[in-house]
Structure formats: C-alpha cells, structure tokens
Image 1 (cartoon, one colour):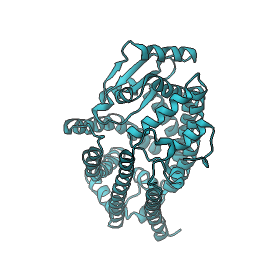
Image 2 (cartoon, rainbow, N blue to C red; image 1 turned 135 degrees about the vertical axis):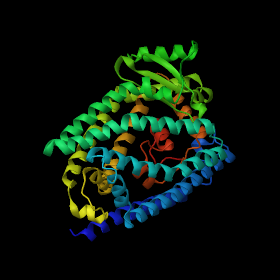
Image 3 (tube, helix red, strand yellow; image 1 turned 45 degrees about the vertical axis):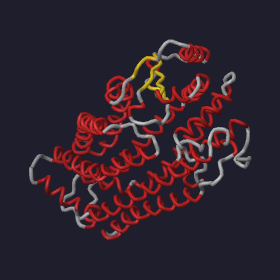
Length: 418
C-alpha cells in the first residue's frame, strides 16, 4: 500500500465516521413521536414530553456541531502537517525519546482538550441550564478541570512513560508486558478509585438511619449480598439527573445513591433500583465486562506492535521521524473502525446484561412493579428519549431503551402497544 493510499484510508475513516454520526442523529430525531407513549401517559404530561423531545434535538444538534468542528480541525491538522510540527517542536528540546514521547502526546491531548472546552462549557451552562439540569457553578466547573488535569498528570504520565519504555526496551514481547502492566494498574485503580479519586469530586455521606436504610439492608441480607456501607453522593452539586451505582469489590462493596435519586423515588423504587444493580453482580456482569476490557487492551497492544516502525504510515502524517510515540497517535486512527465494531458487540452484550439485571430485580418479591415505576420516574427526571431509532441503539446504546425494558418486565414484545 502506497503512502497516499494510507492517507486516503485515514481520510475515509475520519469522514466516514462523521457521516455515520450525522446519519444516526438524523434518524434519531426523525424517530421522535408527537404523542406521549401510552406507557408513560401516567407520568409524562404533554409539556414535559415536548421538553424531553426538545432536549434530544438540542443535544443531538449540538453534538453534530461539535463533531463537525472537531472533524474539520483534525482533517486540517493532518493535511497541513500539524503532527509533524508538534513533533519537531518537542524534539528541539532534546529530552530523550521517552520523555519527548510523553510531552508530545501530552501536548496533543492538551490541544484536544482546549478544542473541546468551549463545547463543554456551552453544554453545561447553556443547554443543561436551559433544560433545568445544571447545578454546577463556575467555581466547581473550573475545580473539576484542575482536578482532572492533576489526575491525568499523576496517573497518566507514569502509565504512558511505562508503555513507551516497554516498547523501546522489551523487543517483540513489549506488547505483552504493556498488556500485563496496564491490566494490573487498572485492577489497582478499581480499589483505589472509591477511596482516593471519587472523593476528590464528590462528598459521600453514610445513609441516615431510617426505614430506607432498613429496607436496603434487609434486601441485601435476603440476597446474601455483603456490603461495606450505604452512601449518598451529592450529585445535585452538578446536576438534577438521577443515578445510583455500586463501587468496590468483595467485602469493600459500597452502594451509592445520588441525593437527587432519593428525592424523586420512593423507598420501594429505590430498593428496586438497588436490586437491578445487585443483579449485575449476581450474574457476574462486572467480572465479564472486565475480562472483555482486558482482552480488548491486549488486542490493541498486539495490533499496535504490528504498526510500529511503518514508515509509509508516518509519511501519510507528513512526519519526518519514525517514533514509538508517533505510532501510538497514528494507530489511534487506524484502530478506529475495529474499535467501532468491538464497541457494537460490547453494547449488544451490555444491553443483554441490563435485561438480565432487570429480570433479577423483578423476580425479587414485589420488586417488578416498583422497578417499572422507578424506571419511569428516572426517564421523566432525566428527560430521556423514549423512542430512539433502532440504528442509534444498535451503534451507541449500552442500555436498552426504557420502553423496551418495561415491555420485557411486563412480558410484552417490542411489537406491543406503546
């Protein structure tokens, strides 16, 4: 394959991905219904439903604007030799290959972050504000950025240095060592995140004594599910959206409820949501997805090892010097189509897992009806799109649409009455 063929291939990837997202957004907006689905007529009035549709349109259209700008920027940056210019700039400091690689990738990531910053700001303080979600202050927003930057330097720089060092010193087995190293780091972070990282962004307060705590503990005991604690998180600090999750492993497992969730759902609905999350553990979904993630990482490093040193690829990016760190950036473009395919397969599995977790919750005594009503309230509070296009679901949804989940819980098919 000639150099210009590699460049053409990369351009096709960039433009093709953009056109795919454009088409999916068009289909998704066209799939919006004017009438409230019958299943939701008891909780969604016409005005709130119209608001949810407007929210879908606004976020979809804004996402397309951001995608257009970023795609045009990357195309222009590629065609004018921007990757090479940054490389030459970093090389002028003569920092050594590994440190130069860290600085090079850090600069590109910083440039990408600066490009996305105005969109993030507008999304938070205009769109989310317009639809009543945003509770983030400018102070909190800036603090989050600084904390994320601190964590990127603290965790990302050593990991990147390790990857570059392995590929420079370990020969043909470098990808294996990178795979093992990154897997071990990821496992360690799973334990450290709830203790050291997440508290940097939110406050976690033990759930107050009361009937809700008693019901949660009783249900966990009936399911032989050991938990270390039950906490509320100040999600309202940033948004009015609702959520709940488990964190930690083994005896260190914790249940975390957004404070917004406790405000909008009644106690039985909260326990039903907990039962759903518990279903993921009972079916070993978290472990299975971790295994898939580990395999994905191994495949990524193996394929990366095949492209390192490919001079024609570097020429397609107009880069004068072949380097390991340059190969990391170039490979991120080459891997994109396969990553899209793998993402689709993972989403298919994830949606299956959600149905299984729903069934686990519904099979618990008197939880089915509470889970349905809880899902409805979550959808209303989050202004969820009740009728996403099947193509959008296929490509991007890790959870089934809420109507499909409710139909499953009620024993209906997707051909049932909406």
